[in-house]
Image (tube, rainbow, N blue to C red):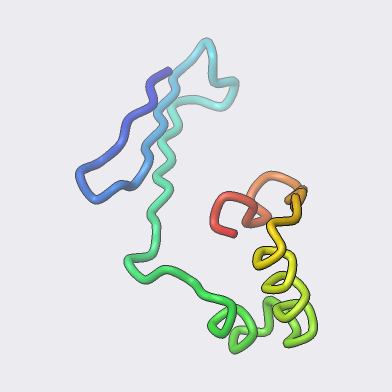
Length: 78
């Protein structure tokens, strides 16, 4: 098994048997060149405008925020 990072920041993982039960596997996590902001998340219907306003207030008041979710649900991106 190997983990690496490409020059553009993408993350690469490769694994082969016997660690991989289905044969050789390679995954690449490619990140967008443009960062998301609250308005983009609202525009993409990922957040409602009320949710965005709530998060903005939480950040302004330096409140702790827990981000939870399953694999691939967008925790790191968020």
